Length: 533
Image 1 (cartoon, rainbow, N blue to C red):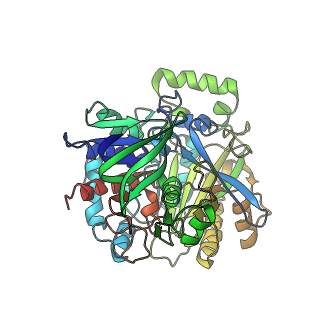
Image 2 (image 1 turned 180 degrees about the vertical axis):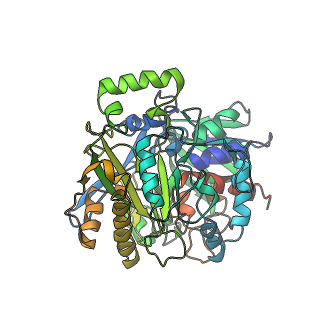
Image 3 (image 1 turned 90 degrees about the vertical axis):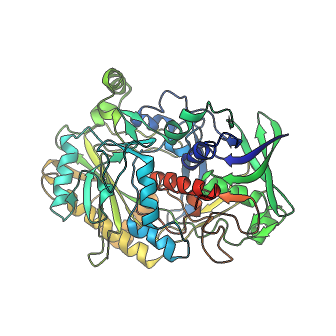
């Protein structure tokens, strides 16, 4: 039995940051456990190589979800299964969220998470290619860049969006108004810059940091009301590791929540039904889940622009890949979407309530668990989602067996706000593509098609043919009340020596993609853990 000061469960975006910062003190022994393997797959460093990884069960976890919606849709939520977690397989979009998002956390009773606290954290963490400014950082461990492949197809969409009031900006993280720009991404010199590359790999030689891969944590060991260690399943063997100070769950909104429930922390009726002894009746573990539902819009073009011809066949992929290997440029060197915009679906909204992501390509139909593929004919696509949805879903274990799947209920579009804003944002997306100069090269709308017109038709199409945002939050939300899962320092109520540091602690949705925000929150959490105020 081996003892450490801190045991971190999950080597993803949050866990990599925590491992870096907690092990910076030489006398502090840190164990970082990752259920997946190393991030050595050849496709990890290639930004657009994530499409290959998403179809490989050795690289990602598949969480079955559904059925939901009128069509009884079933989908899989995908999460990274290697060092770096989802930051090693995601679209690399770097979005910090808005000032109001963080100030809202404080207003909800969580001191120390407001924008005046978090902006300095972002600036310390960032190494932005545009250089330091009052709004961004340079010289930090996380490299951030602006998409370099500024193809004419994407530029046409940006120009059209400007005619609808979206201001063109170079760095969309430096303002919170309606805006559009080329994507800010965790990419350096045409290669993915994951959380593992930024925070973990530079410090793995520290003698006080132990990193264990292929190590699935199955339970938090709780003795006399205190978390004292974890049980780990590795290569068919069970191991026990003990923590002198804290166990920190950073496995993500799905896996951390599952682990809490397997360890006896959660809604009593859920735990009893699954055959788990109730140690802490915490009714909101797995509840209050918020997730983005993406509306999908695709068009066929009348000109050969975009990426389809370069990436849709094995031969084309080989040629494009060979060119990439020469200079790390071209279609494979960018993020999943070349441009991003924030706008008001409701003109009376106080701030942007919707996000659009623009890709100079169009996707071919694929089944769950398959590698994403592109159409052969030229096309352009966009995804859009309600930035701060209010419909709450839930997830819970179905058995005391850690291998058993969870029951995940997303409850998309249950609130009037989500339904109203969702339909309005989709119409705004259409308006942009019906405006020159992008409208000049469109042959027809291929998905969902011009026949989808009413609010109900728009929402139902998003449920049946849209996408999960992979941005689940709230399943272990922080707050000041007794029924909030963690307090403002991310300590689990009812158990000493146990924290959660990942997206599950966010009680509200940050406006946009979550990889950047959770790395910054983990940086801040390290200060709290080390009692630096």
